[in-house]
Amino acid sequence: MNLFPETLRKCMLACALVTAILLPTQYLSAASVDDSWADIVKEARGQTVYFNAWGGSDRINAYLEWAGKQLKSEYGLTLTHVKIGDIAEVVGQLEAAKAVGRDIDGNVDLMWVNGENFAALKRNELLFGSFTQLLPNTAYVKQAPSITHDFSVPVEGLESPWGGAQLVFIYDSAVTETPPQSATELLEFVKEGGRFSYPAPPAFHGTTMVKQFLSELTADKAALANPVAEADFDAVTKPLWAYLDELHPMLWGKGESWSTSGEQTRQMLDDGEVDIAISFNPNEATAAVKSGQLADTVRTYTFSEGTIGNTHFVTIPYNAKAAAGAMVAANFLVSPEAQARKADPEFWGDPTVLDIDSVPADMQAKFNAIDIGVWALPLASGKTLSEPHASWAQALEAAWIERYGQ
Image (cartoon, rainbow, N blue to C red; front, side, top):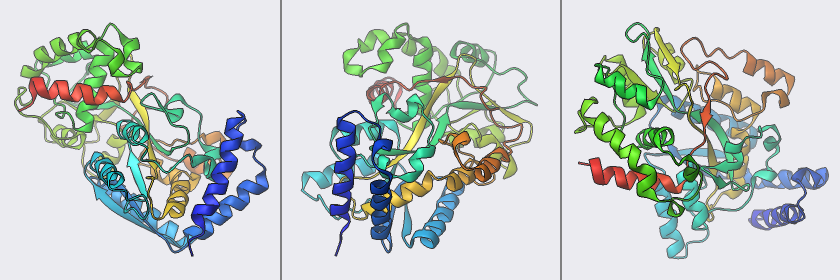
């Protein structure tokens, strides 16, 4: 007999009542929260959680394999990593399931999402509900705009933060003495023979690069925080297209062929095909150097006026079969133990979403002992720019493909 839906309904109703009177969740009695979580953990035991997440990195896949072993040992549940190339495909599957009324026993229990996909899930009512206030480890999460708003869309407890990210550039200091510090300097860099490539949108790193250029070049920066439908798209983006028209013929591939991912630009840097690689992980260079994928002379930096950064999350679909198990998995992924391992370049190197000062002293020591090396972005050295509203991504991708797509 599955008791969890009724248990969760009561838990979420209690939290909703607290929210309705504008009180923070900590005003809910400690006993009721503890009892609720105990019921959820009990229900999760024996469940299989199908976690749909990008499968294109051996290091990330190995980390999730480790997480699965911990969840099996500590909670008696099975975490199955369903390796996905593009999570937008899973969003489409959920839309199709809802259209035919498959509202229970879905085959996706947990998803790794970015802001654009979260916006689509929220807009189409494909999310399980506000669950993060029930996760004990949420207490350790730092307060930041990118955690309360995902691509300018209010999170409202519908997804749990999992890791930090920022657009960074990796270069070989033995080859490039002074890398460009802005979009304008990048154009001058390639004019003078510097080699650069970015993936063609809608590849994630490519879309992010286009958003970075737009954030720097447009005169109407305030428009980017609001839905694209509220803006004069042509006027806001006019400087972007003028810039790309000039940039593309001087890129690797001459605007006729494109790298396929940030990972490929890193390989191209190692192969001597480009002078600058792009990544959305400030610590990726360290992990790559330690695994022999980059020379130890590489360094990481951001543009002087900042680069786009965000938080990535996990969420639960509306028809998840193992919702209790998904909540237990999400809680473990944001635990100090899991976050410290994830932040270590020996295993992944993904920046934590936790407020380190709030975690237990022994875990603080683990975080403080992590060595990101000289190859990564130094802590607190990169100014972070906010992501444009989620709706800008699709509009920019469509416009880019219309102008430059093959």
